[in-house]
Image (cartoon, rainbow, N blue to C red; front, top):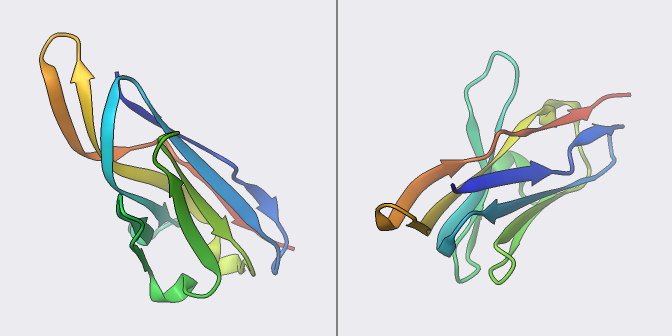
Length: 125
């Protein structure tokens, strides 16, 4: 079974940093676009950053210059380095990926919109 597992969330003071990690596990053949989304209380989930298999990146305007997304294709991992954190960055952060995998019953399958369970990032003094 394909899973995306996030880690690295926590509590940090304003101006601090967090580094989020996400690993894809379970019969993975290849991963195309990967990304990080976040959802703050009472708000809709929003795209934070995305990265293609070739390394092209895209960022939300609110995080440009502060956050950096990167990936390691061989390890099936994506990272989000978050610097100069602000209280408004407080949210649950979710990993997202477009995955091709092997299903034991059905063979090669694609999961174009896979999600992790999320990791909480809290910025507060």
